[in-house]
Image (tube, rainbow, N blue to C red):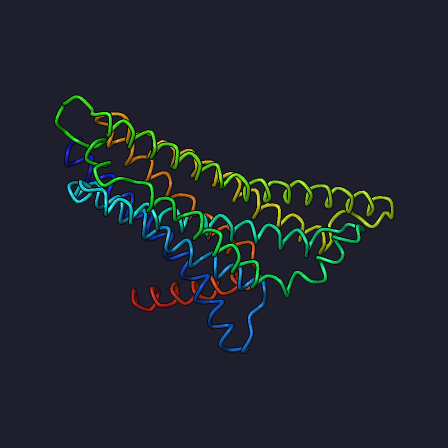
Length: 312
């Protein structure tokens, strides 16, 4: 791959990284300032802040891995550094997905309208259990990530990334098969929180449909605060589902490319696409949250005013 192409891809990656850090840091900063000011934090703000922090960490891991792959590929030769990167990538990836699922669940219980006793019981208790759910998700993600450090032999990267053509030994083949199995399993584990978010999305649609039908029967129209809340929650959840599908596919491309000789370009493009998910979803969440949206407008107005004064 030419140096010019590498430079272009690196500029795009740094741009995506900067945008993602900006959006997620804004969410965390606004909610933390509100927390300090009011001496308490709302459950939705706690989820958004936790999600923003996890995605900042995920962005940093992806960027670090990309830089090492492009600038210092020999660092991965022994496999020790690869285990460290893979551990933190797996950890931040699962934490981010679980926290996004917690957001979907929270939207479902706070906005949806059902008469089932279990739903009503959870709707009443959801605010109090959110901190515990986030802690459980963090612990579960840590537990899932541990096999990455325990089941990867030191000569793996040397086997699959060597530039010298040679016959692969039986040990190399075993390492590749073992690594592939672990990666596939860890990616499949994200299907569970993804499925929970998908179910929440479908139930929100069912709740919205029932709410609109009830309003039509009462001839009161179709737009009210509850309808708007349903639509806003659906936008946040469906954007997560679509972006996560793109992210998962790009991650699989980057992972599978390690087993095909001379495919570093596919790995780099896969990581470039993977950055879209944690970078762009933060801005969708900002636009869908009244407090964050108003804070962003104030910041933009101040920036525009400062630029206007500077020009004059």
